Image (cartoon, rainbow, N blue to C red; front, side, top):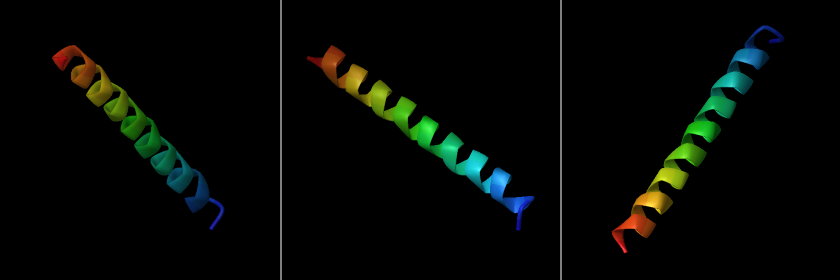
Length: 34
């Protein structure tokens, strides 16, 4: 279980970071649209 935890944590963290960047991009595109 210990060896699995770091990988899962990294995957989840990476997904969250990607989601945040995507959200920032969407907001920027939305603001530029106006």
